[in-house]
Image 1: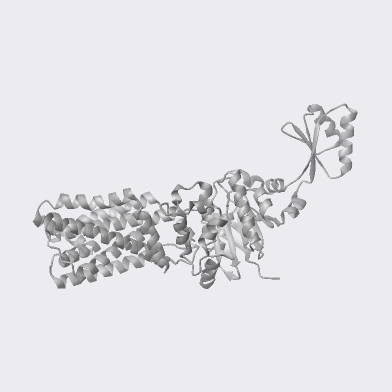
Image 2: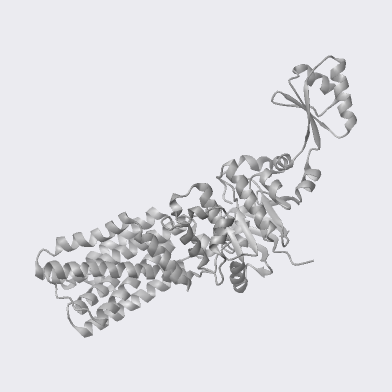
Length: 236
Length: 309
């Protein structure tokens, strides 16, 4: 399958970037060390930090990756082969999934090792993690499809990812925020991903976890659909 | 007569207000090397990108290997059966040459023998070297190898030797001629008349999006060339003054005096005139080549650059 070929090539290329690997893993490690200064805080922050890391790397990393392919002419070269737009996008999502799962694993190991965070690994958690990765990939693909300039896309990626991370209850509970931010949080996809991961990881409300999973899947599907639509495989 | 491998009729490509391709028509036959020759902004790249199904035409039609580029089924079939080299070939920098070819080969159902391709392009010793560490010429050869991973019936090469040094240009010419000898049909673009003349069976000269001439290199020279010229050097101003009395078309090219001529008796007239006046000069005969034809036909288009193709 061609999507697998794309996935293998992108992942292999990324794994050989020592600086990229180091910086990608440095971000979550610093966050864990900063926010997890006590065991109780770490319990709360770990799921939020994982969602934030996945969202930021998904939106910024994948956007930059796709735009780099475009600006170097590699997308055009691939579009002249039998590879389809869907296979190309799927290959990118698969690569992002491997990276995100590795990132989540490193952060969980740090949380458990340093702060004894009681992480429960269950099916809900795995599913919502995958839905979250797909969501962040969908946003990244959409952004890369809408913006041609790598610098604009990168700036826009930061402008979307970071405020969303703070408003979506990643670092503090949505209920403690002002009304306006609470209303904003309810329409942001990261809120459901973040709350769903917290519910499933820390043995919270199973029903709420399921609802949040459903909302995250719905947002992910919507963004993937938009991403496919706005990605131009054959130029006009 | 067999169906042409590429048939382009009245092709138009516009980008907003700019018309890059303005009614181009040509046919490339099976087993032929066909060249689109033109300066920057002539519409060469837009034309081949339409042939490769990476860009949609604004108007007109293009058929490749019998399939229309505008029909979805045709697009799939064309992509399966052609190989292409873009003007700037890039790959993932941290993949090796071998992995790069595996990557492109993975896009096709029945890929070619990759090691055989590395041998053909004389880059086998670079198989384990990362793409980013290759020279421009080596990257170009990997690009050509990537265009061959599906053993294509038609190769479309966009400026295959641009950015290469003279030695690498000749190596690439040899590769293209070798592929032609193996029965491949080839369509390539170039801005170099010598390259088109050296490689192509037929040439379409494009200027500002239009086909201004289309024929074999020798026919183009015969139809549009300025014929033959006498070139006098080291003769001083007296040579120019003397020859001007006999030939209206005499001109100066730097310090040389150039006299176009159609009849061998003109040579006798010129030499007699110079000898009678005791003038001495070195003389050479020059036949007009495709370069002159190209310069003449491309005219003002040659001075433009950086236009959207």
